[in-house]
Length: 135
Image (cartoon, rainbow, N blue to C red; front, side):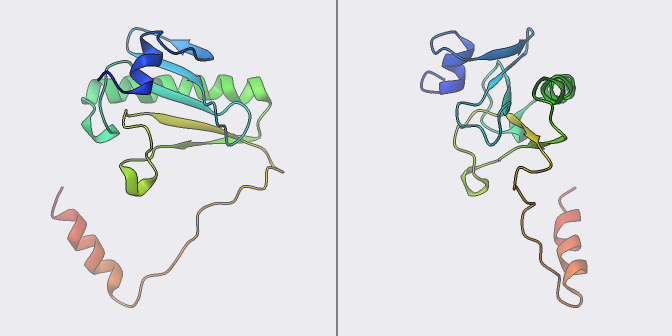
């Protein structure tokens, strides 16, 4: 995909602060970090979303993310981290190349979890049924 910024980074056409690379995965620092050390982990082969990845590549992505997350935490002395994936525009995906975010977290960083809500009486069962029929 010629217009994909991540594909251009992977090909070396755009510079990045690369922190990890193997034959299938590359990881580099996000240029607009939530916190210092915010890292993007991407498959080298172009797939639009995580749902499009073959299972073996998804496994490689997750295993690499685990390894990189440990290094990020130690490297920036984080108290924890979030792993995030935005799938499709409605979920905040801006770059249409599958990727995971490793976001270092610090006890005093001021970030909160997303808002929570509740189900109405009987609504949880209906939602569950609408999901499981597609499994």
